Length: 362
Ligand SMILES: [Zn+2]
Ligand SMILES: [Zn+2]
Picture 1 (tube, rainbow, N blue to C red):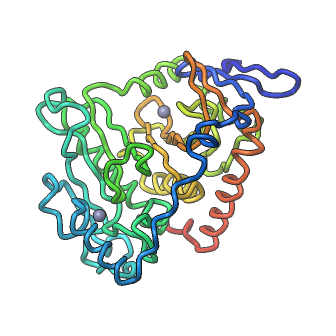
Picture 2: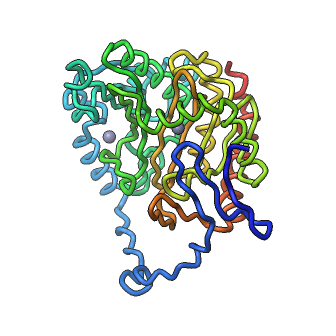
């Protein structure tokens, strides 16, 4: 057994992340008294006063005029790398309300500030922004906070987001100075998203990112580690869904305690070499998790490459945790109180998607 964990009095008490070595303890952190909340900030801030429909329309127009990722402001971004019109996603079907078939639905530009200095990647900026939809707000927005989010996109649209991301990975790897390309997404300002308009980042680097390097090293020594983790998560009751050689589960191996992973145990190629049908399948699992988690803030990374299975880490914010000297605290009742609402939501979405015959797309 290569995974180290401790079961005391029949309860999982701790487990070691096989890649980073971090230990997660299961504790009663949910019972922590929160004096900050109860004494210093006794009330949540009041919601902003509702605007009249006319005032809301005017405010939304003002925001969209100022947003660098909104249609009409293409000249405000760096050079465009590629774009995909709604027609390429929706085909013969009508595009969503408020947009035309010819309008771009996905657009890729270089990040204004490269995440890895250009000097390190052969003088080329290898940090990209993928704008996931032209629409800034949800169709039924009633406030400026009703932003478009990934789980609100139709599943077929999200599948194309993944497809375009894979294409950008390929472009970036064509630069001989680039050794690995990571996909990263922040949802919500609490997770560090600087632009409210829905987007993700694709970042090429002159090295294999250290987190991935650790995964590669451990997997080289223990090729069965991912299967072993999936089996153990199932034993502990942390599974959300499994099928098609793909598993999703709440994971005790996160950087924060509300952490989920999706692993495709069958796809061990770099993202751009994964067969499109398999990538779409993975996108469906990712989509269901994102939709089930709703608009709460998170950050997400997709790791891939020769030597590890395609997988996604999602760290949810707004959840009590403590990270102390290489140990992390997770709620003792994680399986009862963290996983089930999401598991039910994910499974309901899987049924809805099957009913809508989306599985037949490939
Ligand atoms: Zn916008
Ligand atoms: Zn990883």
